[in-house]
Length: 222
Image (cartoon, rainbow, N blue to C red; front, side, top):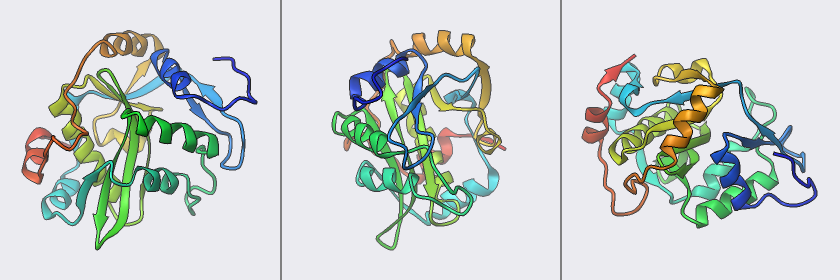
């Protein structure tokens, strides 16, 4: 994905990159440029194989958090870009914040948010293209907040008829949710097929979800 590094990233460029399997990352939070990444092994979750850890299922059932969708996309994006003790630097820079904000206004980028006491406790964001949800990042300010958001995301993805969640890299943290690693060749074939799908809009205000439907939709546990 060669490009003029002095030009800002555009939404069209992001969409084209995703359709080829690439995604952008900055080397550091204060780096003005991005690099285009195409992993040899892709981390994906197929809705039919999605799992929920038993302890997380109990937390979801307790309804500790209020779940909202797309009510604070900018705040979720900024929280994901914050430095933390366990993550002294991040790959989300100003250029990425700007272009994903544009994608949100276009109705392509979405956030799943956990609120408690009127405060944003955690969440995640990503981009929906055809039958693929490209997960970008998540954060927690309270225990299990990002995991609860992930459970609600998986339920929506399954209900909408999406073909997969693209988690970009294979990582042990998401294995508990059913993540597997795919060689790039296999991923590319599944990606092209999934991009042709037209799933339901499960991120709009007309779609309603509750705790019972989330727990019932993800019956496998880990």
